[in-house]
Length: 138
Image 1 (cartoon, rainbow, N blue to C red):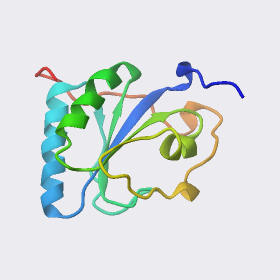
Image 2 (image 1 turned 135 degrees about the vertical axis):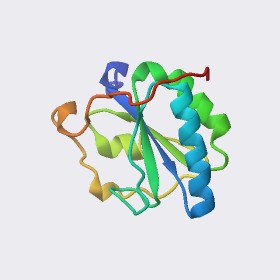
Image 3 (image 1 turned 90 degrees about the vertical axis):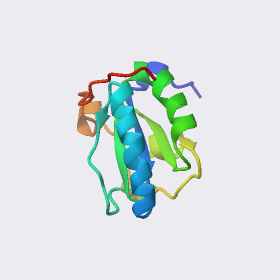
């Protein structure tokens, strides 16, 4: 077996999960702070279940070079919410279920909804186009 190369990671996603109005407010607070501090692409709010996710959430997409700043920030600022951080490689299934990092409680992910392999990153993952303009330091 050969080890995976870091070059296989195209980008990362963090999924911030919430349940109910109070946790949604906490998730909004995190989202605002992330937008102020990091060059990321903030995804839409999903108040209903979407894809393989078992709770409402929004996604934060970010480039490889942002990982060492945003992930530690999320670790200490997640306010008790569960956050899934995963790489984007050619295996969405393994990215979410094998190579994932959980901050807080791990939640159920429906792996049956995720392809085991895709041919190119363009098949599933759009390039990161930051829609935030950071004004504060992390």
